[in-house]
Length: 514
Image 1 (cartoon, helix red, strand yellow):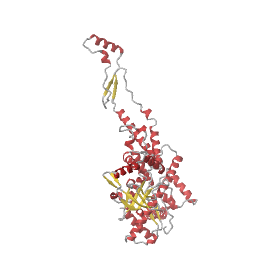
Image 2 (cartoon, helix red, strand yellow):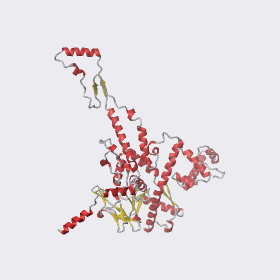
Image 3 (spheres, rainbow, N blue to C red):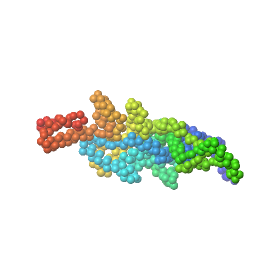
Image 4 (tube, rainbow, N blue to C red):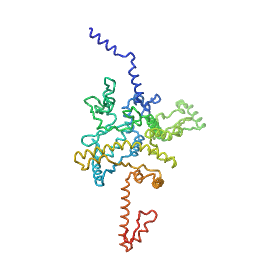
């Protein structure tokens, strides 16, 4: 009895006096750590039911649950065409780089490039052949970094890379040592010094992600590349980029669904005929009705309603005298619909630092100066984003080359691997290519930009461009000589005619040839 009483007393003493204390502490900690997502907070004004209306709080998500925020954004990516279009355009804008090796001599560089190309064809683990390429790996990782704010790339023993979404990194609980220092928190395992030791990844069990010991894998940090862009000092797990725009996404979907439902409802009315009985005819009808004792009352006849409360598409409905149907004028509730849609798209694209016109609309209401200003801002955002993907690509190529050397697949000196490699991204198109070319010529002539930099902005290599121009010149001379010989004409007489405006490169031809 004493033991049982002591046990009860222990439990009672362990119970906090304030039942909301733990919740308050948790909320306060989330506020300090910045784990709240107010952009996903569904307010009381949204509590409507129906397929075209916003979901309620319980149906949508709690605003501080990161996993449900990501789940909601994934659903929007699959079902909301605007979100899908913006994400697709964003990944195409950032682009996938291609390697340009400049380690040593030309033969060694070509050998390394061919080796990387062969490895890039089957790099991503666990997917089909097309999706396994280096290009698709970067593209999928870029989409994951927007939806989840981060993505984990695990370098595997077989030479492939496995992408793991943000939701699969977690812990069964936060672990602290005796001194209160964190040992494991939110899927990241730390050394006592605070450095990251390893990452814990869960497994999907019965539709849910389990982080139990038997269902998780702990991968050392040196084999994991944590992709994402932190925005705060204490941010170990990065925030979804579209989280601040979740209400704008929901509003845009609601209004578009409501507008579509309105248009469909109005289109169901085929014809409506309004009865208009002249007064003299109505008086005669009333007199004849009243004179016949077996006839129904004229008042009942004249006020009889057609059953038009439930209108059916394609039917002709009759209204009685003095009755009318007035449609809700679309010009009143849609006068600012276009501006509303663009404004909400601005909110969504603003999270990605991308102009709305660049994503889905096009530069329709802009002059050249304002459109170019938006383009330049988009260039800056893309350049900053590409720094992270360049670092990731550097790690991939170094890992693949070193692995190929150690396994005997690549015969190159190991000491050259730490030297130089260039990554060339697809070009960001200018609004007016002619003006952009003139600006590049001016910068080049004044020594403010090199030819390699100018050509690299277009996704090309300077030496390849020079090689192509020389080959064009050689082919032009060869063709001129062959055709001139067929017609008995000297090639020296033909070449000056090819120097007119708009003609391809035409080198000067001497008497002896070139």
